[in-house]
Length: 316
Image 1 (cartoon, rainbow, N blue to C red):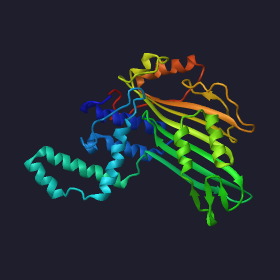
Image 2: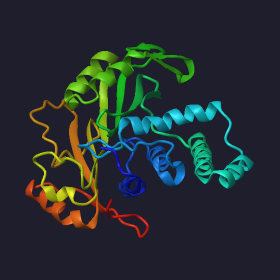
Image 3: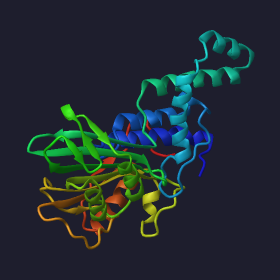
Image 4: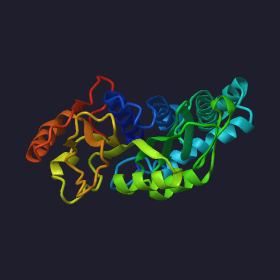
């Protein structure tokens, strides 16, 4: 769906408010780049430079094209000069519409140069430990096709040495080179069931996967979004942002299923590891009661945070 002009600002600010309230930890895409990306989408900053405002019909998250235009604007900002203040003032006198467009263009380009943004896709790896064993940690971020924001993080462990560990070439001083095929693997299997994803990573890296997490930002439900058929319609009558995470690791001490929207099915958890799944919600006041009842009906206790703030809209 494309948002009408009067709904774009309230939508972006409500999503940013909910995300900030939920304070995602390191198993999700980083908070500050996510907020900076949303700020760029706000017409208060960018005017109509990034329109149309496309939102995914079923997740309610900003569409891929809308998000990608912010990234493209960063490339343009690095290559071209910003409109000068005197040019903007002259345009405002002669053609206010053109002057406002020039002012928004400059504000947007300054913003995308000065702030980190979410990537379309990115893999970052580093040597975590060297000694008798070697550990490498990786974080893979991407904008999913359905608009949600994904992070996969994992730690693999292998023999302690300088040299080759699967796709990792470990150099003197702990420097690291990564075979691009690892990123291609994660792109193909980012939505694979968690234990199967773990097997794929272990086979490709030729190492033991000691920790694997996957975190999703979204869906963001509000009136107009198509809810799944099993979801009560009352949950779509306000604002409802979701953060879902799952982790399998050696250091999981509280293994439980705290996600009322996910059925993990039958899975074989590796010996010595456990799985923890959780879904957290940020909700407007008119949704909090029905949401609590929905979670209680599933016999699952989920953290629910209010989307609040005097200057932050509760409706779109």
